[in-house]
Structures are given as structure tokens and as C-alpha cells.
Amino acid sequence: MLQFDRNWRFDSPGTADADFAEVILGSIILPISGDIPPQNIIEIFKRNFSRLSGNQPSRSSTLDWAISDLRRLLVDLAEKNTALFCEAIYESIEQLKNFEQVRVDVPDWDYINRYLVKCGMTIEPPNLILSDEYLPIRVEKPVTLSDTANALIDKHLNESEIIVARGIMWLLYQPFLVIRNY
Image (cartoon, rainbow, N blue to C red):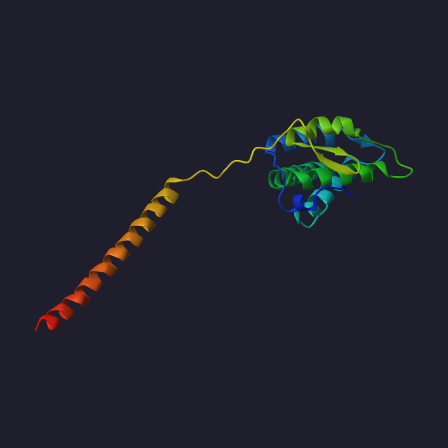
């Protein structure tokens, strides 16, 4: 299991986009080959990405469907949580390395890290490390026109309630003054 700050499972230090996921698929996953059918290699990645994204894994009927399903899972997890994305890659590569009596050619971690550094992380087995070359920038949610309008409406409603309350007090006070003056 890949070791990293457990808080990253819930609040990832970064995310990536669909283009990043596509590069990982084309540069790392699809070139893997060996003495097992290509669909079985893809299914290993699918199983790990499904599990870490909270989905139930299922076997695809053909290699093309397996690649299509994996592509969707890669994009989904990259956009949600890059720490879990890296963990899925790590677990899949380690499973492929540990096959006995079957040769599977997998890339080394230096090669994989050349791509992962673009999302701000590198894998130094068994640890996931935030990359020095990448510092994530937290983007604040922009204030929308509707947020500004709602704040302005709330402010004026509060002011009008105060004015109405003062007016009611004035109306209640007037009969008291009339009675008092008699």
C-alpha cells in the first residue's frame, strides 16, 4: 500500500484534468506488455481505479471496452483526488511486477514520475511525495453576481426590518403621549 498523509484521502493536495489522465493512459498504461493478454493488464488497472474511486469493478467484454472504461475511471479519479489516482497506479504496477512465472514489462518509477510530477506528486516506493517542482495553487471560489446580489438584498432587508421596528415603536409611543398629556 502506498504511504501518504491520510488526510489526502479526503482532501487531496491537488487535482488533474482529463488531458493529464489521457497522457497517463497513453504513456504509461497502454505500452505495458507481457505474457498475459492486454485486456487482463487493463482490467488490473480498472479494478484498482474502480475501488479507489468508490465504484464496483466489472470486467469489460472486449479490450476496446476495457480501455474506454479505464479512460473514464482515470479522468474521474484525476479530477477528484490525485493522491488516490497515484495510489491506483502504484498498486496496479506493483501487482503486475509481482506476477510469478509470467513476464510483464512495466515502466520504472523514474519514468512514471516524469508524468506524475505534472500533478504535483511523485512515487518513491512505498511513499507518495509532494513534488518540489510543483506547488499547488488554491484558487478561491470567485464571487458571482448572484452572490453579490443576495448579500445586497439581505443587507437591505435587515435595514428595512430595523426601520419598520422603529416605526412600530413610534406608533405605539404616540397613544401613550396622547394619554399622558390629558
